[in-house]
Image (cartoon, rainbow, N blue to C red; front, side):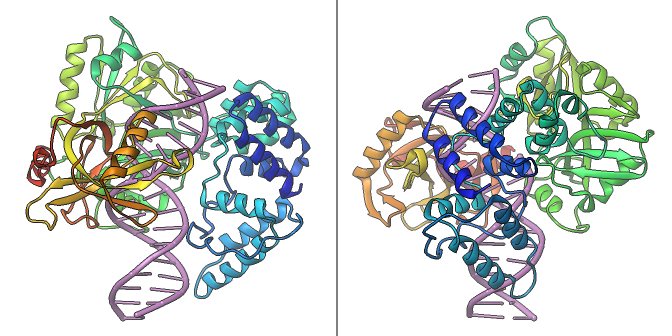
Length: 507
DNA sequence: TTTACAGCGTC
DNA sequence: CTCGGAA
DNA sequence: TTCCGAGGACGCTGTAAA
């Protein structure tokens, strides 16, 4: 299949907002592909390469050769080129990568170059990613969507099941949980408080569970005999980085199992260390000084029995039989909202991030973010001052979007210290308003960042503070988002860096 | 040999 | 990871 | 309800540049 055909479809998909129309366009292209190309085409249509890393990024794709006049590239050749780049390593590899890039992009027409750059940097914006492609796979193969979805979740993604889908419903149905092949993890939606979470997940009078929410990294552990694998949330294999987790799982009294949990670094007193320490340890090749401790909260398979479709209470019971308490997430089960709230407070007091309220009856819905699991985390707020704002891109082009946030700090030149940026929590109305407002306050514009007079106060919600080497205060906000602009406060009434530091002490 | 930076993954 | 818009 | 896309902070790794 010519790349041109794929790029044309991507352009058409981007041009319509109708999800059904997008699905139809994608399905038609899958049907037009040769059978051996279908999986690759599904990757490309999902906006992803088959290769996990190519070494290509925004920077290295800035300067490109002149585009070709006529299309000639085919999808298999493009995949081969990216594969070659992904295999480059060692001295001189950057030069070789540049040469391969020039060759590939030089053979591409202008629209093909645009698409190639987008897919390489992971920014294909066509209003359709894997979920819509999953619909398209079902439509083009003539099999039920639910069957494709389920197979995709259990095999780590839709692109893995394209061939099975085209073989028919029987082949799809045969795709099950396989020990040793990670499944997409079940996700949690969120609620502002425990009572709301209970209401949404169970309802009054029903049994539900409440898990402590640990601030570490998600791990999915598969064991087949002595063979143990550890996967991250995105199904990356990090087995070699976590030998202590491997040893713990290998010691469990079973031979075949799949566990879901969280791993984190602990202080000597057992309290969790800051997330950054866990992240550092789990991102490091080889054993570091920090030890990570696994805590499991679900069991998907045990010695030949798939537990995915069993109600949560049954999976929890099996988990309790298999895993000793010291490696299980703290869990409360009952019907009393007040007791649940007390458990949540205790979890916070123990240094955890919050809780996850869980349906007692729901199956393990791999890859889904539904009402069966609902996380609740406390929210902090500060009144900060906007120091600058960035021009938006994509659907925010033409608006001033990402704002730079400062706290009052008399010791700093200018009187403010920057704590981070945010683009979250802005409605289109707010975007319109702030575009006008910061236009009035602007004192400089380098084409990307507009510096403004520090006069506008904004109420910012955030999840916590982290140590920063980038920002002069040594602190940065985690998950900052706009709550509202405050026109009732002047910049002199905004929060100070000392107030911010006091938040750190509370935590 | 050391430093800077881009790419990539975690949340 | 969070949030708002849209189907 | 589900999906997408707007982009945040950090830290590790490998290569190029100093």
